[in-house]
Each structure stands twice: as C-alpha cells, then as structure tokens.
Image (cartoon, rainbow over all chains, first blue to last red; front, side, top):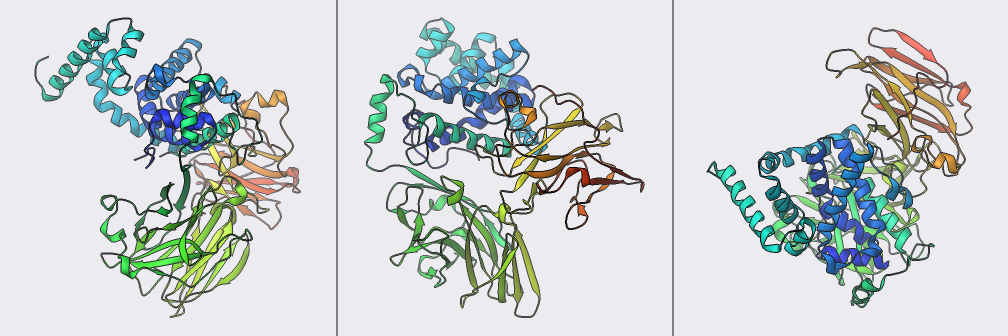
Length: 190
Length: 414
C-alpha cells in the first residue's frame, strides 16, 4: 500500500508545514497519501494511464504553487486537491493537451512514463472499475454529490456552495445515491 | 508504486524546498507567508520537537524471509519498533538475543558515528540483522536533523533462514540525506559459512572484516547503482558466492567515470506510432543531466501491434547547458553543465538479438538484453561519436552496422 506512512498529521497540518518552510517533506507525505486516489479518479475519467499520470503531476504541482493561498477554513485539503484535478482535466479537454505551466514554474523536469509505470497505473483502473459502473448508473445529481462527499471528502457546506443548492439538498442526494449503490451491490431494487 | 510516482514525489519535495525554503539547504529566499496561514504556521513552529523523516531502503537480500524498506518518523529520543501487528513473526526479533557486533565501519564524514550491524534471533528461528550507528555505546541512527536516536531492539531490517552452505543475508541499505553528498549505502551481511569477503565498489576491490558470527559491514557515500557494488564471499568449503547489489535493473547503466548512474526511459507522451527514448540520472534530482528525447517508429509486424521490428538510436556527445529556447522544449534536454559524456541511446524491435557498439575504448560494448527495450550505452566525453559504430544482429542472422543518428523522427509535442 502506497500511503503517507506513519505520519499522523492532518492534511491541513502537512500543507501548513510545507508552506512554512519548516518541513518540505511534509508535501511529500501529503502527496503519498493522495496520489493513488487522484490517479484512480483521473483514470476513471480519462481511461488513459499516460494522460491520467500527466494530469496528476500537474495537479500536485498546481497545488504546490498555490500553497500560500491555501486557507484551511475554506474546506478540506483533499477536496481542494480533487477540485484542482477536476479543473485540470476540464482545461486539458478544452485545450486538447495537458497543461504543464505549474510544473515549469516550479522547475519540475518532465518525467517520462515507462511501460512499467503505465502498467502500474493501469492496475488502479481495476480498482476504479469496481465502483465506476455503479457510479455511472446513478443520476447525475446523485453521482456528483456522492463523488464530492465520499471520494473527495468535501464537507456538505462546501459542496452546497459549489453545486449552488442548499446543504439539505446535498445531504438528500448523497443519501439517495448511497441507497442506490447499496441496492445495486445487493441486487435489490432502487 | 511506480517509478513515475516516486520520481514525481522527489521532484515535488525538491520544488517545495526551492519555493518555500528549507533552512538547512535552500539558498532561495522563502516565499512570503500569507496572513491567514501565519497563525497555523506559528503553532507548527512552536511544537516541542521538529518532525524529521529518515528513509532507508533495503535493496538486496538473499535467502531471506523478505525484508521491507523502513520509513521512520522520528519524534522522540528512541526510534520505536513498528507495531507488533504490522510485523510477521519471522521478522520479529527476540529481545534478549539482540547483540551488536564489534565491527565498526567509519562514516565517510569525519566525526560521524561509525556504522555496525546488530544481530538477533527471530521468533520462528530466523536470524535478523539491522544496520545502525554507535554513539556512546548506544546503537541507533543519526536522523536528518543531526540528532542521534537509539533504535529499539524490536526493530529489524531483514530476517532470513540460517543457511550453512551460503550467506544468510547480504544487502545494501540506503540512507537518504538532504543532499547527494550525505547519502550513505551500508553494505552488510551475515555469512557464518564464509572464510573471507571482498567488496567491489566503483571498480575498486577491498577485503571486509568478518566478525566471529560471520557478520560484515561497510559504508560508502552514494547510491548502490552509482557504485556498481559487488560482494564476493569465499566460503569455507572453497565455493564462491557473488552478489551484485543495485545493478539488477537493465534500464540502469553505470557511469564510466564514477558519476551518478544513468537510467534510460521509454516515453509514451504522444499516443501515436512514435516511440521515444531519453536518459537522465537514475535518481531524479534538481539539475540532473537530461539527454534529448529521440524518437523513431518501430514497425508493427502483426495485426495487434504487439510485435514490432526496426531500430532507431542517437549517437552523440552531450555537454553544456540548454539555452532559454531549449529549456522551453522538453525534447531537447539539458545537460546542466555536467561533465561531457558520449552516449548511444534508442530502441530496437523484437527481432533484434544483439546490439554491439564498436570503436569504444576497451573494445566491443555489448548492450544487455536489448530486445524491445530502450537501451543506453554511456562512454567518457573524450570518445568521439564519429568513431562509434552500432552493429545490430537480428534473429535471421542478418547484421547491419551504422554510424551516427539512425532512423530518428521528430519528437512529438506532449
């Protein structure tokens, strides 16, 4: 399992430690904690390992470049990370290529993707594939709310703000989405 | 996880250090800290102990029960053993069998505590070893913050089944550092059946002392793949056991002048028919020499495209620094002013059985197992690329010999 290891600090504490210059490795811990989840998410969206890896790299670089703008009061760091990934993906689709501005700005050299890397990233697709068809079968509003709450771990208030609906509507969509998923997994009716 | 993810982590941490400043290593002024973060940062700085992460990685163990790299989060004065539920019984040392060898290997940095090996019996009869340093009679490690901390007797690097006919444990443990200069590789092993041991590193061979239990230890600056490590054990019955450490990856090539090892990589950046190959230091680091990306097309020979034929490669001397225009193009590479090297790099198809480079000092240079993999050969910068010829042999026995860049196409824009 690839993860942030034994470090018990919260994501927010890690980003603060990295931004303050007291502990640059803290960003590495944050990265290890979330890189696979981000990759799996991007892989599910793109179905292409090399594209997912490229967007993943730009996502973390973008976040790193904006650490000084991070406000812990405005929501969980994981939610921020997923929002950045989502935006990067939309931008890439719009432009027809993955942006590398953040990586250039930070002086991060291009990292080529080897065949072994592609294979390793593709393995994440198998995990994503377990849930993806179930999520895809949900109505758009439920899937969106469920992804934001369960995958991205964003709080209800923040999701409500993003989706421009009330918090109670978000709760209802998440609840219905979970019920539908449960029903699909157990073969019951929705 | 994949090399890509690990390389990206190193790049991100290095970029964090450059951007936000690390007091110990960064010459770049820290970025201004926004007001909304100051309160939280203040709290972090006022914490009683700074968190320091030291990483060790076991790169080679023979006949062992398996061994894991260790990540230690150092907060207190003792580096504790991992939780019992995370450790298999065969890798759990019995506390009252723990013994620190009287071997002492001096650290390359004057004044640093010497290195040694700790031996213990495992709960299932295995023998366990741990490398560490000795200070004031205590066994432990110096962390990245310069503090020495005792290693809990319940911690072990690796355990293996005691074997009379060969070495039980032979490995190299890498200790990360904030700079390349501080990286240490600790070669160690347990070979009760050995009569003598020699270590070859960077082309030089030296004998290692064996303690009465057959333990040995040596410490070197740098990473194993840079040093082309080889441990040669002469056993009591006259047989010889040889272990190469850090040289098993065919994509990694030792530098001819003892510099950082090189790693050749095939790229999949375009999604079209082109295959692309480049090389850089085996360990990603800021300012690492980066070759240009060279591309070519390997022809599919069946409908699935799983088998491909053909060859493409570059033969060039690499030196100097990229100018501003080159820096905007990832494909042009940047040698970053590192010492010049002459290199041959590219890729061949499935039908190729051998790639031999002729005209290099020391005679023919044969590329190991080149089929359908990116390949690389690196020579000193004094070698004129015009003197080199590349001889390719295919399954049907046909041989072609070429000079200079061959069959290259334009690299794609990622």
